Image 1: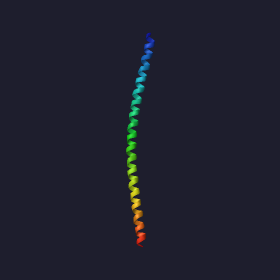
Image 2: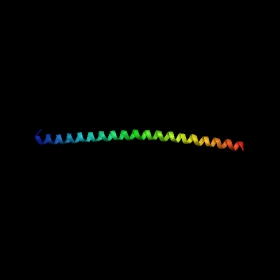
Image 3: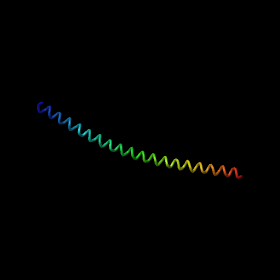
Image 4: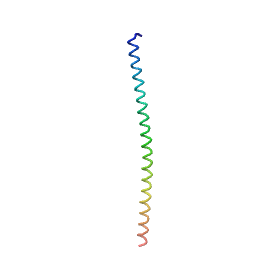
Length: 69
């Protein structure tokens, strides 16, 4: 290999290293975003279940009042 070929190869390797570092950073950011979304989803599911339980309790109270009338 002559000098220009080695320099070209070195540039390509440097570019690959930068690309790998960039992809690694993006991957980490996406993993953090996914973890946040999973946590947010769990919170929303919990709130939804709580709201459902409250509505069911209200319906049960209304039915009890209707029967009592």
